[in-house]
Length: 390
Ligand SMILES: Nc1ncnc2c1ncn2[C@@H]1O[C@H](COP(=O)(O)OP(=O)(O)O)[C@@H](O)[C@H]1O
Ligand SMILES: [Mg+2]
Image 1 (cartoon, rainbow, N blue to C red):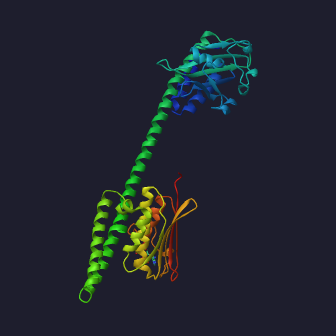
Image 2: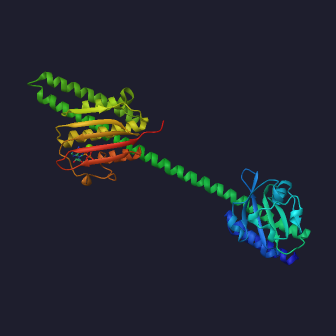
Image 3: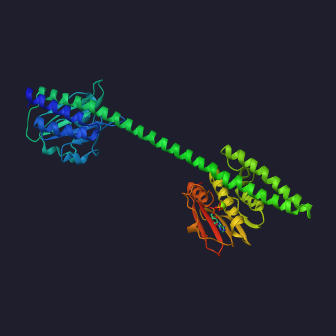
């Protein structure tokens, strides 16, 4: 088949196809088509070596076999292609493939429809095996050594392109991974910033609010009830040192120290006890949750309780922490003034950290948050946390 002119045409077009793009599939598919067109054969198969280097996988073929992309797998040494891969030498079979011990019939590739075949290794410049290229013809034909050489040249061109395409893919994969990493880092910084703001609002500033309540009560009582005033000042002192502790821990990025000292259930009791001007009933069973989840639950309870104290004018408030099925459920209930949750500030509100912060913390730990409230009907904040397995 190969006169000099045909040869030049094939090589030129192979170079064009290969330099047109860096996509591996396009290169392989394009070259397969080109090879059958210019070598007067009927089909072309390109088997590429897997990353592990132990198997050949069909990665390109002329129609209709292109539909088998990725589905035909051969071990090194298996079939003619496997033999070519193992020995790095071409094979030509002019007719009667079944008589050749290297031949293996693969039904999907319909070998019975083709008579002659040539198979050459695809080898890159430093001598690395990349795969195997096969051509088949329906009619019997001789493949001359010039034909085989031409196929090897095309295969060599393709080898470089395949290696480049793989390298390119690996680089883009890595670039994408880096991009995702950068995004994640920014997200984490952002959530860390919000955490700190939330801790200042929910923990520290709320304690200072309570502290000033106690000081006001002390100031009012000091003339006529010095004993009560003293107890109020004592409570204020306690809150001042708690606020100081929380400041330190917030800065260090750690969770409220009370959680480590007492555990979640007892911490909720202590939260409720510290609330000024309101007695809160607490039913909390000790239950195990990951540390960051406990912190979030504690902060949510803290803010919800502060809201009860600040806004509800309730006669009754309750904190419940219970295990319900495979979930841990926190409830803060009051029978106070209630409000319209739909009218309350949303999570996009960057100024408030109250309800928005509760929602955000719930979302961060993948918990389900339910806020039931209506004017005059009291308020229930319900948080359901899926317990981690084990
Ligand atoms: N338990 C509650 N009872 C009555 N009103 C509440 C309760 N919790 C929240 N609210 C209402 O929702 C509003 C938003 O609460 P929040 O986001 O925590 O902000 P803040 O407490 O700083 O006002 C409050 O100002 C209040 O009107
Ligand atoms: Mg609030």
